[in-house]
Structure formats: C-alpha cells, structure tokens
Amino acid sequence: MTKNKTLRKLVGASCLSLAAMSVVNLAYADTWRYAHEEYDGDVQDVYAHKFKEYVEENSDHNVQVFRFGELGESDDIMEQTQAGILQFVNQSPGFTGSLIPEAQIFFIPYLMPTDMETVITFFRESQAINENFPKLYAEQGLELLKMYPEGEMVVTADEPITSPEEFSNKKIRVMTNPLLSATYEAFGAVPTPLPWGEVYGALQTNMIDGQENPIFWIESGGLYEVSPNLIFTGHGWFTTAMMANQDFFNGLSEEEQQLVRDAADYAFEEIIEHIDGLADEALAKITEASDKVTVTRLDEKQIEAFRERSPQVEERFIEMTGDSGQQLLDQFKADLEAVQ
Ligand code: 6CS
Image (cartoon, rainbow, N blue to C red; front, top):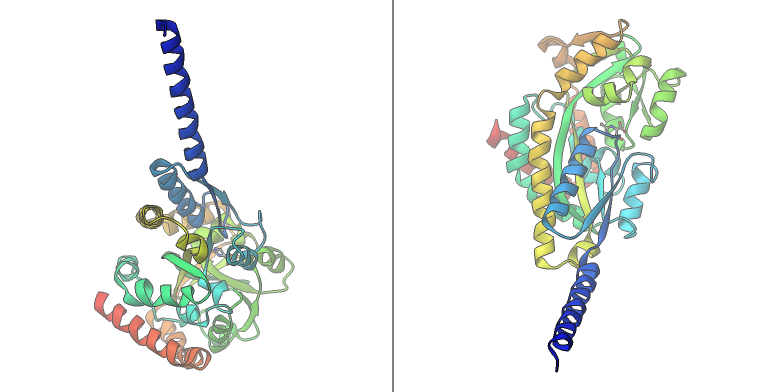
C-alpha cells in the first residue's frame, strides 16, 4: 500500500468513527419539553431556565421551556405531562387540589410562618415536603422533583380590608381548589374560583372584587392597576411544585436521573436567592407606578380575627383527605415545629 492510500484509509476510518459517534450522540441528545404557569422573568420562569442551564451544561440534552399561555392553562399543561407530551411541568398546588387533594394543605391559613428564612428551612428539611409528597404525586404518575416557595400571599381588593366583617359579600378570586374556597368562606368572603387567564379581566369588569397572590405577581401581572388595595394578612405562602412524567423519568438511565435531580436542586438554590428581596422590590415598583395603591398591614389583633377561623379550614381539609391528609398534616406540623 502506498503512503497516500494508507493515509486515505486512516482518514476514511476516522470519518466513519466520527460519524458513528455523532449518531450515538444524536441518539442520546434529546429535547425535553418543560411547561410552567408564569411569564418571562417570573419566579417559575427563572427556575425553569436555571434547570435548563444545568441540564444543557452537564449533558447533551436540551430543555425547551414553554411559558403561560403557550400550551394553555395550568390544568392543560398538567394533562399534557400526564399524557407524556411534556416531560416536565411546574404546577402549583393551588391547581393540583382536584388531582391530589392533600396538596391543598398549603391553603390552611396561618399554618406557615411568615418569616422567609424559616419558610426556606422548612422546605429544605421537611419530611412532609421531601418524603410524603413525592409518594402522593407518584400515585398520579408524577415524579415530584421540587416544591418551593414563591412569596408571601397578599390580598388585593377594591377597598382596604381589615376584618372578616369587611370581607362580607366581597367576591374574591381563588385558584381552583375547594380548600382555598373554604378559607375565603371562613374569612367571611364569597370565594370565586377562576383559572389565571381570567383574573385580570374579571377584576377590570368588577365581576370579582379581589384576589390573592404574591407581590411579584401582583406587579408583573399588573393586578394593582385593577385591584389597587394591597392587604398583608400574613395567612400563607404561594408554593409551587416542579415534577416529571414518571414513565419518562423511570426510563432514564441512573446518571440521567441524577442529572435531573441535581438540576432541580441547582435551580432551587438559585430561586432562593432570586426571591430574597423580590417582594420589597416589586412593592416599590407598584407604589412608584400608581398613586391609587394603598398598603394595609394587619396588626396582631386584626390578624387574630382571621387566624381564629383557621381550625374550621383544617377540619375541612381532614374531611376532604381522610387519614392520609391527617398523617400529612401531623408530619407538616412536626416539621414546622422542628424549624421554628
Ligand atoms: O394566581 C395564579 O393563578 C398564578 N399565580 C402565580 C404566582 N403563579 C401562577 C399562577 O397561575
């Protein structure tokens, strides 16, 4: 064989093996679809993009993120995930109540502390969050990867409200879970369950008189424009959950499963930093943007009038969830006690 021929053979062989390698890489370079419930730059969007960043930096896989509205409402993206059309979904317990009644635990008012550091330690260490909930989600074909807080709930209304009596006849929009309706009934209001896409219009046309959400969302969704009286009641935190279709997750290699778990942990750490100070920044933007806005922070005595109605909501939670809910609530309370 001449020198040239040998060289040509060698080049040919390396091209072949390069091509083979690319085929292997291509076979393993999947695009995973991930949908969440919020807009560009909101908390769930930051989480999703941090997850994407980690996966793409540490593997050949890609993550395609879909924001609110691109694939429908919250219930639609959950259905698509259960059907395997999406691999990942971020759905808040506020909408998961019909699928997993125990997820409504976050809507028992005054169960969660208001102090952010305690809340974060709770999410990190709670057995209810990190062990009990994954089992409940697994029963619905979902691999729960992370639960995380987005911000303290704040009520907005057509006028400042300081007592349950002032809530009388006020139609307050709630996310679509029955326990949250029970909470607002206990608070003296008329709960009105609506999907997110209808909230701004319903406030604008006075079909409803108020709603609740974390401040960053009240700012980013422009809710203060149509519902300008902000009331800090201290009754709970907006919590959300990120998960995978379980058949998809079980079909991944052990290394890939670890990659996904690590990406979820990485995004969690990033989100904890992201939400630190976010509520204050958003409130400053709101008060800067509108002179119609009022801010009412209930004092301890006013809060007590709402807090004393909490046991009736707890009872409703147990009626809706039975022994499983009771066990979860006991664990939840034990975990809270451990961090407070
Ligand atoms: O109120 C809602 O429906 C929405 N609130 C937040 C903070 N995120 C998504 C959810 O759809």
